[in-house]
Length: 485
Image (tube, rainbow, N blue to C red; front, side):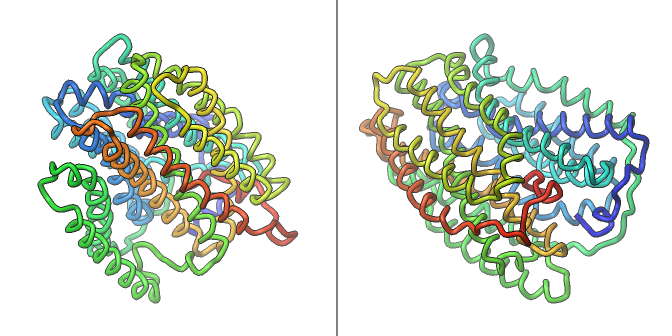
């Protein structure tokens, strides 16, 4: 968010209209974010229907997250260059078209294209939502509104699998998109008719080279990591180390270019937030926690259906309590953060997360569903205690002129971490399978959960590096906001 946005503390449009605008943006963001994880429960059905393996199917989630990571660094430019109404209509149009493409997809390739188009629209919506709230909501009510947004952002990915399971229990996988299509189209029509947000736009330079280099960097790394499982089984068409090396080189070039451009304030993504210790510690913990969250969201449906033989409906219902717990704990954790700071919440949260992931390693071919539900709820409690404090602490440690860049870094790394976690755990599950074909079994899922549990030990150790709150850095409702803009 730029300085102009921060300086506005009163609504620039009447309160009722502001409420309608915010409600429309919150609803749109919820539907879009829901699509990040809606595919996880459907993967087994898609694998059977489309004749693909788990390593290929996981790209329907990883590709979505990766696209967001590539697009999000450009949102700062877009929000300064174009009016909010134009950005909203473009975002919802892309999302709606992507939904339609996915619903009509004849095969995996077209379905993946639809997911990428959806993600392109989704990447812009959350920054637009938070910027609009800062513009329309008075300072004394901003914290309350941001708390609602935080809940939406946290709960939508968690209940995506439940919605998917309910739909797949009665209908085919295409209906996951047909159900969403009229909702998206309605939001687009309402937005065209009602969305009016006064804003100052200005011509700002876009470093196209940086945007292209970042796309090569992130896509190369994630494609390479996602291909390791197939390569180990001799199924990969390309050695995974080639895209990994290309991606790493592109990332190094991207970082070098940003360091040079930021001297003149022309960087696509200013990297000076990494000079702040609190920001770095919080970011590392957020990355590892996001890997655990999306790893669990991708592994659990595969385990429930491939090992326990649960139906898609049962799978969705098993994951529902955890999603509800995240929603209920959101405002509670926010209030505790305002009183206690980050460390008193992050340390116990990391320990709870570690316990949950080690409990997942005890699951086998005959484990009862109630045990899976209980462990998943424990996992979401740990994550709830960590996410909001960490992301708020990360941004609160920065000076005001780096806030927008810090937000972009947090959001980008969130998406990359989710995609990396998905790719890593599916690859481990495939390699650890006792079946030579790499089919889903108890041995493979146990191995994947074991890797996740090992990572959680690192999370616990790093949690003690989170700075203790002081009287000069006491959290305020202004800083306790949603994770990204």
